[in-house]
Length: 280
Image (cartoon, rainbow, N blue to C red; front, side, top):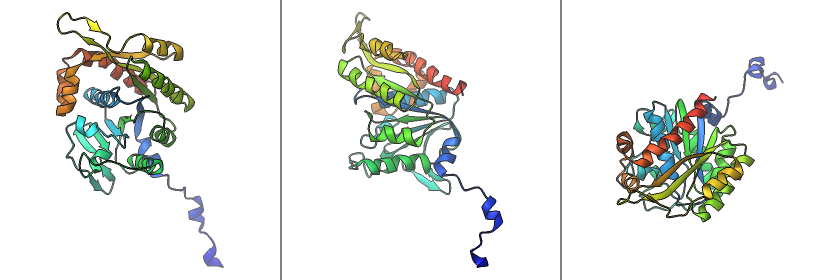
């Protein structure tokens, strides 16, 4: 009978906290980068945001949650990088001393291997990225989400109940704006503060006359911002150098040059996200 009595010291001992709670506590600000539809440059924004914050001296992690179309390894020129594991967990790939990245792309046999998973498997992978990856102490975790408001965004919102904000990426095209309005509503329903909209591919600067050509139209982003009372953080022109930078994997080197109008305008996005840390 005595053997079945629980020792008094075990009754007073606090239960161990879940590892995901411990990991997330070390991260000061968690930011989701979302878009209503694909092809609007969301991963470009997420990657440049992570680099921009790191170059300002912050400790940054970039988590690529696009399970089916991971492009972060390509953007950083790290498609052949391999992950390591130690007693702390999975070690993310280090780009700079204060910038590390994680993507399912690092786990694929080759870049052409598809991920053919249903929702529960994707949710499990995202939980593992937050729980088993050893991010360490971070000022920012930038979370690059796939388009839409489905499994992956919902999983992140549920796993990080105190997410500090979302940056919503769109183009001036009506089709994209219809979808981004849904992303704004998604954020509001899940109590995620909307930091603002990024109006990407906002015109093409003519190399001859220097005037802007509205390739995808204009006015729609302003209307969405007004309807939902959210700010437009930046209007970023179509810039061939940005596409070239990503294809070559030279994002860090090109950010240091800071030579394009796109990059100069993008500073406003970095500043807006940086303020979430100041407000904590």
